[in-house]
Length: 236
Image (tube, rainbow, N blue to C red):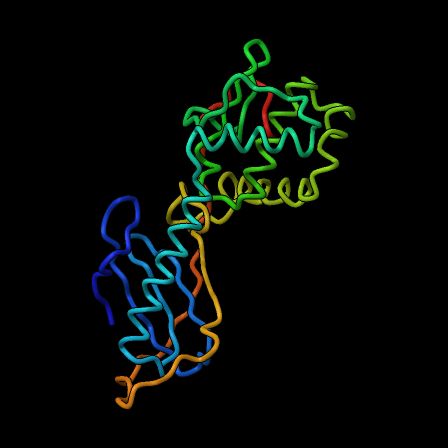
């Protein structure tokens, strides 16, 4: 079943929602983006009223998750300030922090002359802890220009440093030397939301319409190829 969501939006445009009912689902509801569509999977027992309620709830959760993955320049500055205070004793003070689309194959850069930090727009959509690592990496360059032991010692307090490095290395491998059949080379995996519809909602007297066979609930696409990198200190 497919219909236009009453209030769901994606990038300012109305979101086309496809609802998939599954008899195998007992109490979970999941949602993810697939191009211009939003796929919402629900238990087959849900009534039409329950369907409308949970579709809107999942659209709201996806929108919130996407907003947090794509903060504004002002939010980047605020986040960098918080990270500096928490992990660098507040010693890193960038003059500016903003998104940049000309970082080439770098995830971010720090210009030591003026203290400005630029984060590649390719990081948009990645998990928050990955963005935090990239921000911390560039903040650390304000204190140590190179990648020596002193530099990495600054990042030891961040608990997800190694995990974030592995994530970015995986994205780079997929983009630069991974599977050739990748269809969309400028995207990362879209947000996916799954929650328990618990406690079970009451059912109406009318039985729901028969449901088609359920399909997989996850979709992933790798990140894109960049251009030549500028000569700046960067997250690698």
